[in-house]
Image 1 (cartoon, rainbow over the protein chains, first blue to last red):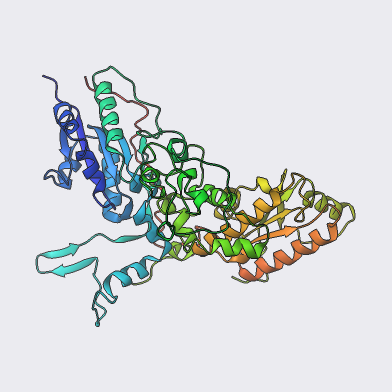
Image 2: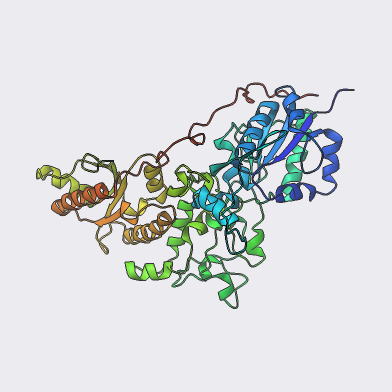
Length: 332
Length: 165
């Protein structure tokens, strides 16, 4: 009997939702087990980094890597898994473009540590901060060091495929699992390297059933401030900043169908170099005003423009991070 | 950084029908203005995708100047208003990224306004000179510069995509 091909999954700076989405494929997960030998998957089984280090280079057929690169441990494992894997997939929005953890790039890392360890909810009068190394009688202990910025996987290692979504939709994951199993059996071929898989190539708007009438708006509003929401009309035309026009399809416009605006978790659509820039164009296109004063007044309805247009994509955008975050951390 | 010796790099996006001709006029009339701006001709300021500005800033420009026809005088009826709306939202987004609003400027200049084009350019260069270099992504690079030099791994998966049977 030939040995089954090996499968690994890892989480770096992420929330764990991607693992849940994989398990949400229900009985399809049994196909993974039937066709693969799961060698490394910290959330599901016990394994040590040194076990992976002992593996032969390229011996893992498929690695799904979710999470961005936030610290030196993430980076080490990313490089290690790249070395050991034939196919490395950036799985989920964090690995593809930084996702919500990537919004940390709006602040210098020192500020982030300070906020986490010394705020109203964390009483820390003596300003005690974690140290990355500490001497104990048994030797020196280390914890991972934060890097200046969150980086998508592609900015650290070579990536074969990208699978966007926060998390990727389970039916899309199931389809990709089916494809890989077919490839293993020699019944199908892999898509070209660098492909974005498990999604569509158009925008969320193309999948959205809401009607678009090229209407202009005088006001941007938060969705909860509009009552009642028209269930059939485009949300952007109702004044809700909806990220659909720049976002890749693949989710069946799940949020707009449920009455909420698209927040852009599937990342940039095909041909979009900078997600935020595309959204700036889209939002500007519905503004019904020609004087700077009136336009500015309408734009005041978007309280956090940077967070709005880069909610999932900041770390993967052209600018990558706030100017302050680029600077080197001094001290803590 | 000594700002007196700092020569800003500025990318200018000009409209074919007005400001590009204004710059031509400034040239043929031998008007003198700051040589720091590199002009890129668009058919209309409405062609300006905010991506162009972000790319210019992320790849070394210290400032970006966008020029178009005066409001109401667009060759394509009203595209310069679209440029204005994008510009105002873009500036807000850039502020969130820590980029001073003054680094991106929108100027209206008709084909007859060579003198205005020259004066605005010189003024903008002086404004950017005061702000100092942007040096995006290279600012204060020190010990933690790993994220700029991305080391590639030895393994190249595209070379042999062998699949065990």
